[in-house]
Amino acid sequence: MLTVLLRAFRVPDLRKKILFTLAMVVLFRFGQLLPAPGVNVAGVRACLSNTRGGLVDLLQLFSGGAMLKLSVFALGIMPYITASIVVQLLTTVIPRLDALRKEGREGQARITQYTRYLTVAMALLNATTVVSLARANQIFPNCDQRMLHDQSLLALIVIVVTMVAGTCVVMWLGELVTDRGIGNGMSILIFTQVVAVFPSYLSNIFVISPFALVTMLVTGVVLVAAVVFIEQAQRRIPVRYAKQMIGRKTYPGSATYLPMKVNQAGIVPVIFTSSLLFLPQLVTQLTGGTGPVSEWIARYLLSGDHPIYITTYLLLIVAFTYFYVSITFNPAEVAEHMKGLNGFVPGIRPGRPTAEHLRFVLSRLTAPGAAYLGALSMLPIIAFTLLRDPGTQQNFPFGGATILIMVGVGLDTIKQIEAQVEQRAYKGFLKGSSSRT
Image (cartoon, rainbow, N blue to C red; front, side):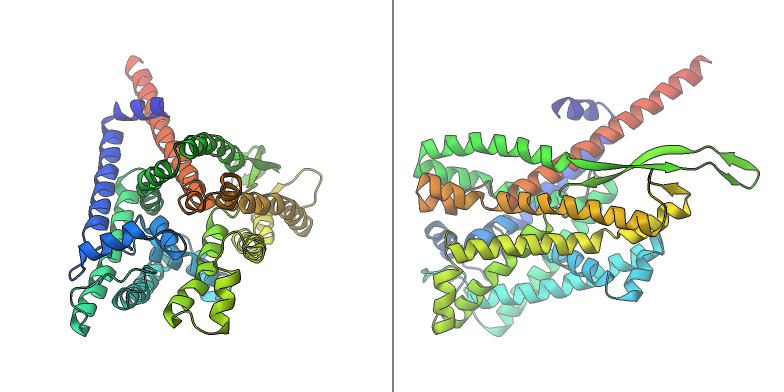
């Protein structure tokens, strides 16, 4: 990886793209540290230093600590991620969106515009919820510090508008990185959010136990290597294209393969499950934690090591994995596309038999993929059981979502840098050859 980066910095065009990406990341982090107008910074810091676990850790992880600090970029990239997933799900049930998806670049531009509108709506909903919780001092449990200087309606509207505008700026920064930088801009920003909280997690673990820190670092290296191996694992289905004649020109047949990843769903099932399981805690905080329903939730769904919580967590991950794979990979559509290009899988007839074969292979790959995501998500609970320290579980930095985001985005970005380096080296070789001739 270091060699690839050094080679990229020797190319002026790539060096500008990398520096531009780093500049956008710095600007993004500055907006996450800049408090919104009307926020009591001293009170927020006091609550942050005395509160750990539960909803606080989830918000800390997926916002880079910005949401808990009520900053300008408090919502981060999560409204856009949520809107993208919702639009992707709606594409499978709304014929109009499905038709736009098949129209190519123009249709994709329309879908992107719909995603932006939905992002603003999601940001407005999230900002209103966060400001309401901050006004009622319910973001941090057992913290009586006042988080807002002024709790009038006008002051609350100003904070909500600031957070929504910050989300729009974050979305614009991500698109700028995609167009003028390296890698996918939205992925780079969510990678930045996750990595930003790592130093605080590691320092908290060191305070608890230096031995636990060393153990987790060694475990983290092994886990990252294992995740890289699984993320790169794929089933290659051989595909052959018959010789075809277009006009007066004959194109020879070719042989290639259709890659199907073991983890076809990526990180989406983990994010879905984590968000869904923290909704009961959010409802409990909003209702004050009184009543039989709130007591049942507090007993069975708020304790990360309870058997009911663990079982529900695993079942939801498996269910979301199968569901998301079924809507993102359509075997019938892939089979028809191959048939239209005179392609076929050796030993299997084109059309419906090919679709059934792809569906069979996909079902066999989704099972170990779902088990892999479930096992990866259980790491904080396993660490708590082995080390027997509640603080270790709350500050365990190598959770399933964390590792998947870091490894997935890191691998994709390095691959894009390496591809552009090789492309420019290839162009330079051709230019040198033509000049010698």
